Length: 347
Image 1: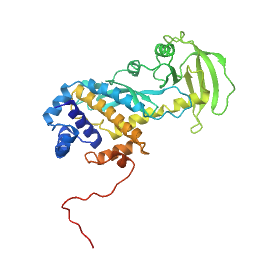
Image 2 (image 1 turned 60 degrees about the vertical axis):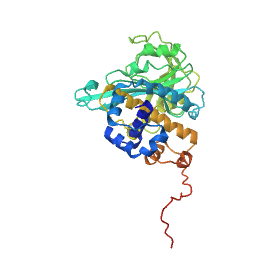
Image 3 (image 1 turned 45 degrees about the vertical axis):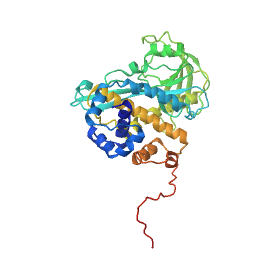
Image 4 (image 1 turned 60 degrees about the horizontal axis):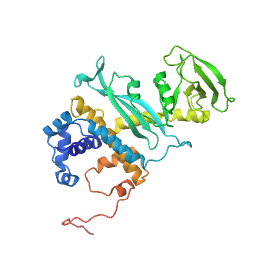
């Protein structure tokens, strides 16, 4: 059994929402006449299970990088006026059953894996991904991401490693995050008067006992009041060339990474796994990320006015039909095809 046959089988499980190994294999056997044209060999359940358990998942980790390179050439730019690359960073737990996956023990009666993700706002693509055990802290995954110089990274206040923030600053990477409530700092300089939803714009120096805190250069602290909820927020950043309102809008856009986690869990098969080994679980998660990029590539290359969810549903219903993808995504049905030997009824 080839790795391409494995990928097609797993992608079928994700897009068609198959429930088990037997379900995927039965679905592929029902489409046996079409597998040859896909370059896929017949898939046996025992071979499928063996490949998922034995063949390393790192192949699909490398495939994700290749697909991302192809997609970002077609992806639209983010909606801001600045030219810097914009990334949102967060992590999410992928729940598992402790009875079936005892090696993924997280807490009392619970098991999980954790997906650390860096989302590129140009097309909202998964640019960086690390999958760890559920107990691993978010910063362990974040430190493995290598952002290019001039990039802007947005993350939540939970990622409060001041040494890591100093490394970002030294590498020429900008960051935007929320200030912690127990942060100790002194005001170095007051900015321009408050305007609109901006309460203040200051330069502050960290003076607390946080590790590496005093060695950080003075940072910018922006106070903002949400016009919809009336709640006040404080954002910390090392960006100097953007206005305070843009800083607030950048952090607000971080919600896109939460929407991505919601989409991938609702539309792909990440709530049930086909095999129980660690390698099989990691393989299924990496293939899910690859399927996301394949759907994004279809969206960008066809210029279809459809959401990712709508494209996934169209593929689910037409997965093994020979259809023109551009016509399918653009809603063109085309003329009906005459079937030989079909009875014609006329009034």
